[in-house]
Length: 288
Image (tube, rainbow, N blue to C red; front, side, top):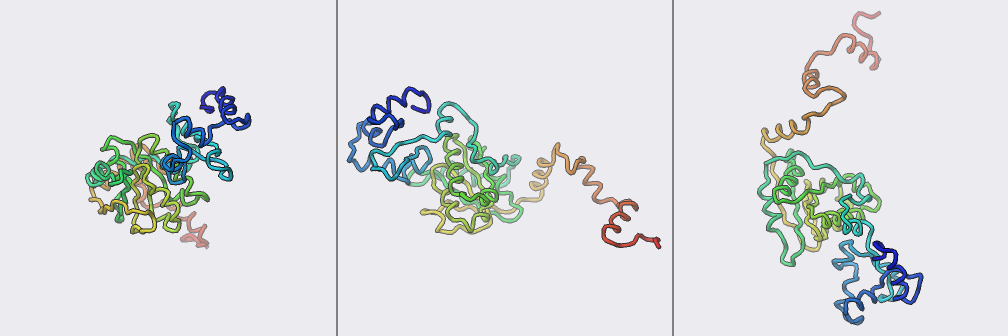
């Protein structure tokens, strides 16, 4: 409430008996909800692996204080979402990618996994889509997500691997999917093979996640295994269709793609050949 209405800062200062403490504390939250301060179930709501804290919906600050007096903070992105904002968390700038064009190859198994793959603990689905060369796993996963009526949130794991605090960025990405009802699609998983903590953050099962890559799943990456699916290589017609969709309306090196395709097979002009030979230190034909 202090993030929505400034008057609540004064109210919480009064309830905390300290005008400098303008957020609810863990003890005050339990009291307002009628939960005894000594109840283990109530205290468990504020542990690092709880749905609220572990899922990034609540931050418990000042851990050096006794538990009941620790202030609670709702992250800015969560507040913005509750107020109707669809803008993704700024921390994800540079790691989110646009979904590829829609395809039909191999969509069925992934779609069924997302629709029926909730675990016995009623936690979110985690799918490991092991891809073969030329299989287009990200395009398949995104099409399968769309077929379920959800929106894919595509995460570039190569860029994520470059982040110093990749695990925290991964948690923000999972939270973004959870807030917006999207399915997180990350690839290539191989880029995070040396950063298991980042994979564990992605595999927390607080939102549905599809991780695609050629690497085999390491049991150390999550306490319980994902749903494993093999993504075979696409047929030639499907690969051609995806390339056409990707190149449609785009320019390559400032030229029309169709002209560029034609020019790559044509013989270079004599003047162009001479320029290339000069750069390589070779005399042109007929020169002294």
